[in-house]
Each structure stands twice: as structure tokens, then as C-alpha cells.
Length: 292
Image 1: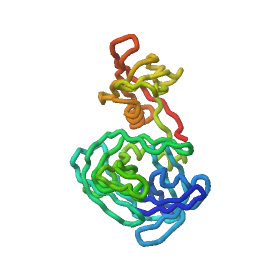
Image 2: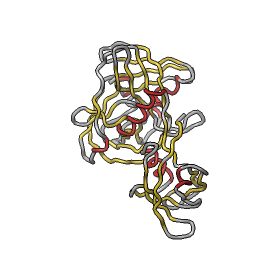
Image 3: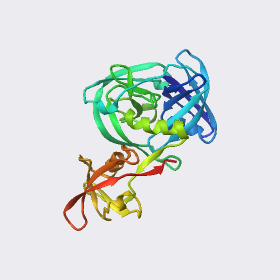
């Protein structure tokens, strides 16, 4: 685990990360995009190691859609974190969050998995894309500065990347109330491996525009994009998505989160209410789209 400090003309900040991969010359660090985003347009990123050394870092690549980023430091043969399996998690499993909340490096908090597959959206502004997370929810205390740090299982294997909290306050009064959200590691691993290999990542693409004014249950398709996955499966305009691979879809955010939890090329089953009446299940092979 490492601490991350960002200084930039657009504002600084701090966060956490973990050593994901290492070789004899370099090490790659996994963190959140929102931790380092201010430095994209110009700034410096420094990483503090467990022994107190502070080394400069560069951005290898990032994916705002998943709130993930990869940094590189010129320091090799570092101890990398052990990988876990976020798909094997059950509610009630013990977990530990590592990070640097409020600048207190090397802080550890413990708790349990409170929920899985929790649809969460974060960010979204004139300069930042919204991130949609199919989150692992935990009651382990997560506070500002924990972002990007690992959530590990009882054996110390990473199963999530701490990314967001629900809070009763704002600004300086915001803090943990036992509602923390982490990006599932198995989902993050695909994105991070692509960034390390190519400098960028991809996301699954269904090829639809949602009706943002729809207030009913489910997610209504306003338009199907010609030539893309939904069109190839012959899903009609005006359909309302009710289930994806058997999981209920309550609203637009849930639909986006569920779709983004897959990889490009995956085949999924989408149950819709048809505009002509009745329902139908469509088998769709997801397309691919560059994230940024």
C-alpha cells in the first residue's frame, strides 16, 4: 500500500494506492482516477512508500468511467499486493481497508461485506465524467484519503479498490458512517491490465441511448444505434430493460452499472418490455468502445 499526493494548478489532493505489478526497474500502482485527475492537465504526483521514501510518479493511463488509474514509479522489485477473487464474496465476509485517511498513512480499518453488486455513481461535472460502479459495499471505515486504497479479504488479498462513501455531511464534516463502496477487483483487473499493456482501456458497448426522462421501473431505450450490439440483436426502440442476466433493473443507473460490469465481447441476456406489449429476452454480444 502507498500514499499518493497530488499538486496541480487545478487543485491538489491526496489518496492511496497499492503496488499492482513490479519488475526490476519499475512498479505499477493502482488507484482511483479521481485521486490523480487534477494532475492530468499539469502537476506533480508523489508516492510515499511504506519505508517513508517519497518518489515521483507518472500516469500510465486512466479510465474515468470506472474511476481507475495506473501510475508508474521508477522503483523496481517492490512487494506487490496479492490478488483475490471479488466474485467469490458473500455478505458478511470479513474485510480490511488500507489507506491514508486525512493524511494518516498506513491506516487500517476492518468490517464486513455489507452488500455486493450495489449500483453506485460518483463524480460527474464539466471536467469529469461520471463513474458507474457495481460496488462492493462495506462497513469498514472509509474516509477522505482512503480513495484508491485496497479493500482486502481475510487472507490479505485485494478484492476491491476503495472509491466512495455515503455521508450525512459535506466538505469538512463528511466522514464514514459505515457506508463505503469499493470497485470489485475482478472488474478493475481487466481495465488495469489493458492500461498497462496499451496505455488505454475499453468498455463494453450496448449501443443505445437511454430515455433520461423515464420515471417508471426499469430503463427505457430511447434509441438503438445502427450497427451496434443492441441493433444486431434486434432490440426495438422504446423497449424497457427489466433484467440483465436475471438481475432486476430498477432504473437507468442500475442498467449502466450492470452493463459496465461485463467485458467487451461478453454475451448477455437482456429481458425487455416491448413497446408493442409483452416481454422478450434478447441475447446480445456486447461491442467495444474506448473509454477515453
